Image (cartoon, rainbow over all chains, first blue to last red; front, side):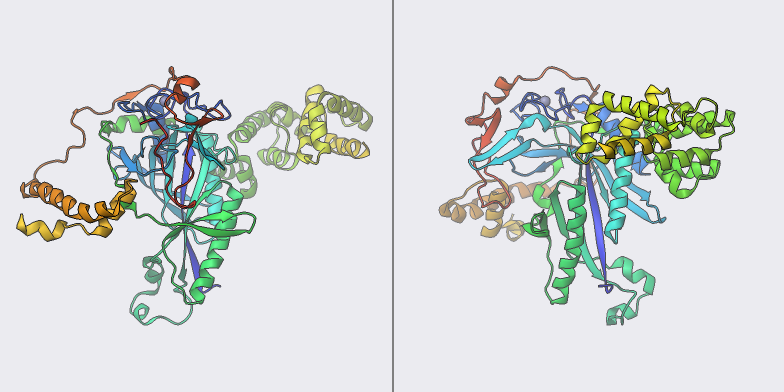
Length: 456
Length: 116
Ligand SMILES: [Zn+2]
């Protein structure tokens, strides 16, 4: 198997959390709403309706581009991507092709490898289809919701890198507050292009390879086909699909078969990919500039403003925690995973300075004890760590009383726990911390709670 | 005109392909007739290539405007009844279209989503 190297590129679609849609004033908050209650002539594609660009969506797209080290275009245009599908009432999607907002970015993953970003562009989402035995039902609430597409170069060589990159993007969207990036709700969707190539660095050289410098060979040779994995709506399935696809392609090549351009989906029951269609070539979409939308001219001053408004990004935070506070690398990563935890940590560090509590102690506390940061205050955490400070409740009888009270007050968590959702214990711990005004020793609280829950 | 004739001539394959992209069903007579007719149209348009445009910037929009944008504010939209009023068929407050036309691979037939 090592004779072959996977070549993977990723397309990520993320739905922005703007208030209104991309080209009309309908509410973009469509999830779980009554069907076809968020529509207007624009997003229904009725004749004569004209699109009107949402400034916030453009700003958000630029934010993502800047955070991914992209160049922002001086001039950007929308184009029509033409195809027929009932979720697309106009017969085309307004997207970007030749003049995307952002190009040439990069994102570094943990082992230091750079993933090159080809483009970050703005487009609109489609309606939602439900297939029944009598036909297809359409809800246009989602039609026209702003969508940003982020396309990488084929730089991934294994599925781990894909996983990490996608997680990093999700983190980024949440840090930038441009999307909830919830995969299950479809806020964030992945498509992968997968092919495999013969590992150039190993084995005897092919004749035409022998004359080329070794390190250049691997780079220049991309396979002459690629398989698109599409319409796979869960991250776990996408990972499984990529893994299966790599194996399938290697088997085919070994058997002397020629692989071709095609789109495949994932069959979760059979745990295999299956052919959806052979690829329509890019020009089949007959892209042309959207005549109803004037061009966007992007003022460098405005771009600079957006740039300076960006929050500190998770990977920059992780680096700073290591450099500034001497936090271990693995811990720094966990602490910067979400904005909320990072803020909790930073506030605790600030408070800790006054109480001689070292940042690494706070890091240990957060990483190991996983306090419920919605109910414990950073100051309380510091006090607990410093601990053993007067007033900390360590007495088991006392803690048991508090634990019982928390269980009474949090019936739902209790039931969840009984149903096997062990993480519901965090809610109960949080309850104890609240009742005790943060004075309970949370590690002991957990032990006491676990004992009580088991005896039930 | 003679010059470009061979270049623009459309074969039947191409015509069928374009028809598929445009979601148009063609009869066999039309498949016979259209390559010739469409080629003539293309030849006619081909005259434009005689104009020297090497010093002309492409124009994509004739309004001369740029940056026409709006603030992100929710406005009024259609109610459900209005939204569905053009649909010849509906179910569960959703518009209904016919089943897939090609056995589940690729494009749908969209005819009939809205009343003609
Ligand atoms: Zn609308």
